[in-house]
Length: 303
Ligand SMILES: O=C[C@H](O)COP(=O)(O)O
Image 1 (cartoon, rainbow, N blue to C red):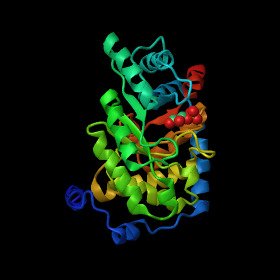
Image 2 (image 1 turned 30 degrees about the vertical axis):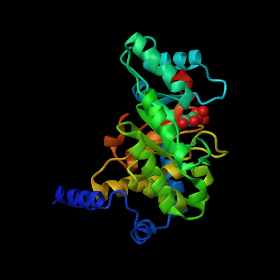
Image 3 (image 1 turned 90 degrees about the vertical axis):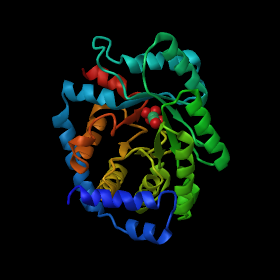
């Protein structure tokens, strides 16, 4: 029975793939969150982070990192230096690699060229689809995904339309993610909810659900450009949605907190949260990443 139920749900999901039924969606996402319960869970995760702080866990954190630079003054030499760091973040231990190197679309080809010339491998994440605001025509979002994959990105981080989310137009949120998913081909799609702009936890849950329905391989909290980025509170809500999705479909969607995570202690609190809500099986770079530009520095200091 345990295996039949996910199979049946997978059948239902696949039958309706690409179609968004508003009534079914509203029924599934109608739920409240108990702020007190979330606050208690968060203080437990912060406490557990202190217990987790050891060299083995820090090495694991390094492997979760999507090592990021997303600046207007990024150049080929800067992203190549970052890729070298992502491939060998601990100079004395060549067995450890970051999850990926994460750059703007115009810099993807620079990283790809370096990897080809040096015969090295590393996942390349390209932010695309109107990153960071999402305030662009769908055609250009889709084109950006296609061009990024053509340049060598193996993973694409897109943003949802916050305008549509705030207008409760979840069908448009879903349909845009679906269009980008198709444009990504075999590249993994991580969908950024930009939770700091979604106003309510209920919207965070709905945005998570619409993104997973549209085929996202990961859901990600933030771009790093909002005034409020990753928080344990939104992580709790997003992982609850990922858990529910897994119960219904048998599919494991990844989770990526990103933006403002700078210290080992902060990163380990997310590790404790994922372990508690989704289980140990999520704690590997296939299902858990941390988007961060400076976290690696603190990890190396702590080793
Ligand atoms: O996706 C990754 C974020 O943009 C990184 O944000 P951060 O610079 O605050 O670490």
